[in-house]
Image (cartoon, rainbow over all chains, first blue to last red; front, side, top):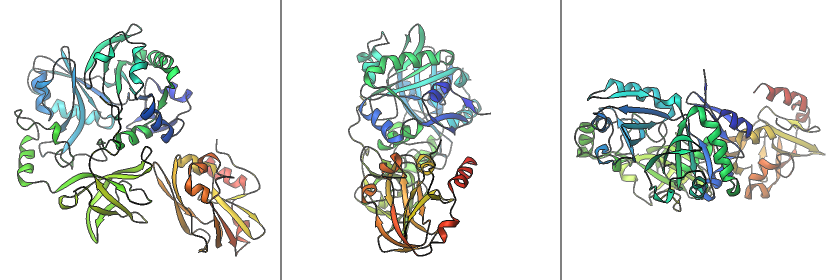
Length: 362
Length: 128
């Protein structure tokens, strides 16, 4: 049975092309991926991300436990601070990438939709310390309001002074009398916010946000543009760029792995991987001519196969084909020329940093 | 609903062809452009190339996917639409007119009669 988010009827009303994604009926696009993409880069757009999973950890051992199952240092989080992190298997493979919210009396883990059940079982299986764990995904609606105009729109309906809400911080506040968890987070590279609400009040909040954003050209944005936006920032997508066969070090996520914070699942394996040296790295590359690198295509250097594409599409901001993929270490340096084996081979060059460099995220 | 126009023929691969004398104009259907969405690159066959009906002769790339272009008819490519190569989004906006892809000087005119009529094509995409 496919699930519908609290905003499903809104998507239909807005003419969405609906697809099945992670067992949900989700909007792939409304007016088109490119115009939606540009709306978020230049104005403000709203994503229904209610399919994402929310797992709540309560009890006195919650910080210690969250620290044990994730790679970033949860003990460093102040009240209402948020961090990006990964959760690993003992061999260093990635269970999921996630957000960790340190809230009053609870830790909230926000995980990928396709992984919610898997993650929840994994967390239960590894339960220790004095904690209670609940999967509250079905009770919560989530919207991401993203784009340079997101603050001005949200400030119209939130009393909390948003100028005081820093990047990767949250506040528990209200919109029109409805309690919401609001954080300055997102996965687009633009300034933006994510709002978690009781699913029952979802539609009302949606209407309030769109009313507030009317003068700023606010629009609903589908999963298609969500993918191209995160891609241009070179943010990893679980299932494409990272999964249980990849470790966070080779994926360029070493910055969310704190090997010296104490014991956590996967730590031993990562120490060994680090000592042995990485064999491959996730790199970004752009097409030198026409053509678009697509996921799963092989990457060659001359006649030698050196890797494969994990994400690849046309960048709506840069107007060319770009890709991400794992390549053997010697071929991971910027300016290395490689060839993606599409029907017509695509010449690419390795580049560093995000593809799109003008994001407004704080 | 996908727009299907009268007076032209269609293929199972979602191309259309319209014949005038021994010249056929071809493109992709409204259904095809809508399924692909956001077309960003198009590579029709080069002028002068001899093509066979049903042969993969080019590619069309959208943000999300790449798709082959199949020749609806056999013949020689005599003109390509430079406008859509420069701005492929024209195909999304107007697949049957401004968004045409290339012209063929047909060598097997009888092939045209084997292509799908608008009724047949309508039935085909109704099953999708």
